[in-house]
Length: 107
Image (cartoon, rainbow, N blue to C red; front, top):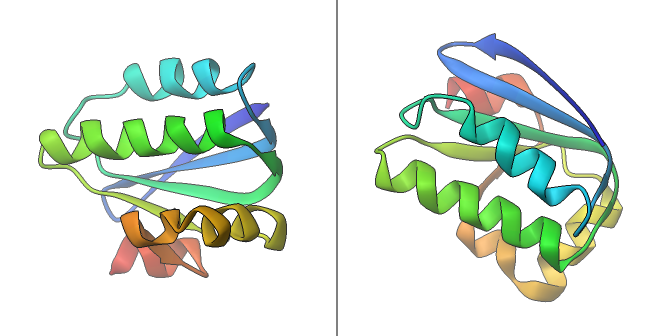
């Protein structure tokens, strides 16, 4: 999995590319752990080819950590494969999800 970032309106936009599963979830957690706890995030999921329960668990864990630090985590640009996992597990109820990265950073 490749991870890149940029900043929009005081949000760090973390773009993921590849597979978010048991083998790559620790990489994402380590990457996010290197940021200040109070830094708000938008995670761009457009280029995530596959997401399993470990990847979903990593996202939930990051969101919980951000919430305890009074930061915000949003998800953006979910493709159909990822969206299906969120629908099946009803995880969409746990996140603010946006169709556009800029809209997420401005909301």
